[in-house]
Image 1 (spheres, rainbow over the protein chains, first blue to last red):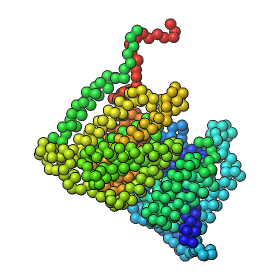
Image 2: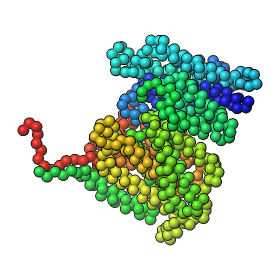
Image 3: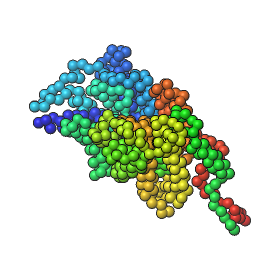
Image 4: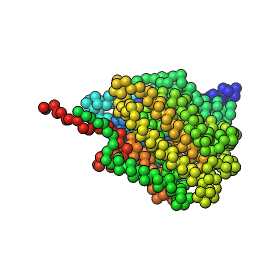
Length: 287
Length: 351
């Protein structure tokens, strides 16, 4: 029974990793940009909510709705005025610019908030649990997982049911032709990064509620997100969720065997998938 | 008509002479410089070696790795393992450090080459994390908390006694001087070796692959083999540097030896600021880096923030770095690799 419990906890943890990864997957899918500052942006989102919660005395669940538009604007501006200038055939500029951004952001947070661990204030809801048969499930992990599924359904609807989604797909396929049809790729990219940062904010909410965070944990979140995206296959959002689940289950099972193996087990699962299915479980695009 | 193909330029001839003088000055530096200067120079030289190898990977091979700390850490741990477990002298163990890095570079390349471009970058990072986590399980070398080199191993190190007598310094200072000379030798061998490599047929093939992989393949360049060559060479050199750095520190822990900031972020900034894809770039970069560090050392995280922002600005307005700016304006090349044709009769199509 302990094993069933461990695996279910792992699946729910996978929801968190899928939330980390969804924004990364979206941005990569549309503009082939890998944002190395993604993890640090998640951490920044968590600090933004911490500030809102502390200054305005709001519940984190309300603060997230104030943080989302702010993060959208940040993402839009970041893409429009910085990252768009790095896009092109050469892979060096986007990598090096986002890497510089990652280091700058980490140290800005360190300067502003010190290296002390922080946590968003928890209430009865965040510690509550429900009994499902013999297994006890935390409400927070369930909420996280449900949010991940909702985010992915929402993104799929956006992509395939709306005008904006059509513009996303067109720009992704061929930015030059799309611009002949009256689409401005620069703005489409900016909007996509804005949406990615809205998802980052949701991820940050659960990151901050479930565990302590400090300015240095960003890169590790980037790595989990990246692993989930690669396992799932580039461009497949449901694949990303499955990728997150695989990392989550590997980590909880690893931790159950030996607490020191938690992170290692996640990485090993990633390498095994890379070995047998180098293009991920559900490859879509031919990248 | 007699044609000659040259790569030398007047500037490079002057640079060779000045370079030779500089090398002599650097060799005799311990005879008149204090211990602080020697330690600073050791830091500059080892960072220069790491930067040259990363530049070989990213600037020439097009392989942007964020996992160089795997090779620094592996090299360092191999040196500690050789000294503590096998009882070897630290100086020859540096070679083992390079070999150990080479050994883990093979599976790393096998996995990472399955990923393209940006994903290759994060892939190497994941593998570096795996190596760090595995090494932290190695309890005989201190596990997660790390360990130190035994006192008698560092005291009886090769050459140390000779340096003590020759320069009249204490044992600790003699060890720093030894490390400095080894770092100088490694840096010169690295720069010379990379310069030599780039001027051979293989270097030409490498430049072709960098500029256009498909076109290079069409004229018979084995692009995959070039990638392997560059990746393994750079891992070996980075491992040597890692072993040397931790021989001088004499104290190791997995978090420090596999630090992405110290061994990859700094190195990337050095290369980007100085000028990626040139041998001169990392040399300029490491000097700027050291000056900034001396200037901003008291400001903690402001320092790294400045480096990050500087790298972004340089990448956007001058993607070829400081050396690129200078070289564009003046046409100066200290390490020319372009072959130029001279002599013979020029015939133009109009005639």
